[in-house]
Image (tube, rainbow, N blue to C red; front, top):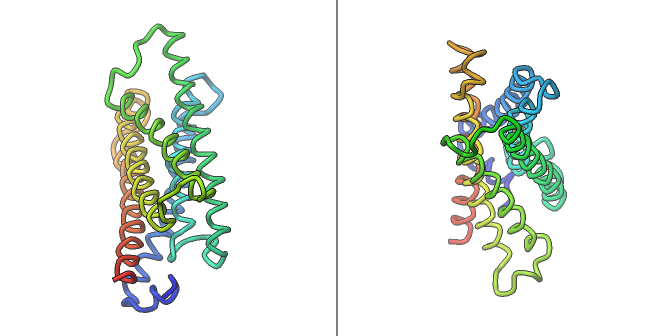
Length: 224
C-alpha cells in the first residue's frame, strides 16, 4: 500500500484536517521567518544575523525539508521518493550551514562585547541544537551510501533518521521559542503579537510530530 492509498483509506475529515494543517504550516514557516527578518534587519549589525539565520535554519529550511515527505502537504508530493530525498538533502545542508553561521555570529558578537557565552537556557539549548543538527546530517550519509552501514537495514536506518530528525526539530523549535523571551525580542514585540509569534514554532513542531509519528505508525501496520 502506498501513501496515496493510505490517505484514501482513512476518514476524509482526517485527511482534510491534515492537509489544512500542512498548508497552514507552510504559511507559518514563511511568515514567521519573514517577521523575524523584519525585526532583526539582517546586516544592520553583527548580532542581527543570529536571529535571522537561526530562524531561517530551523523554522524554514528544516521544517520544509520534513514537509517534503508529507503525503498531505508536500509541494512535490507527486515526485518520486528519491527526488524528494534529494530536495530534503539540499534543504538540510542549507539548514546546517545557516545554523553554524548563526552560532558563529552570536559567538563572535559576544567576544567583541566581552560577554560570557552560554549563560542562559536559550544559549545552551541553541548550542545543543546546532551540534545535534551536525550529528544528524552526518548520520544521514549511510542513507545515501548504504554500503557504509553494514549490518543495518535501510528501513531501520530510515526509521532512526526520522525519529532523531524529529527530536532535532523539536530542539530547534524550543530554542526559537526561548529566543522570543530574550530582551532583544520582548523590547520590540509584546502583547498579542508576542503570543502569536510564540505559537508559530509550537504549531510547526506539532505538525512535524503528527507527520512523523503517523508515518511510523503506518509502516508498523504494514509490517504487521
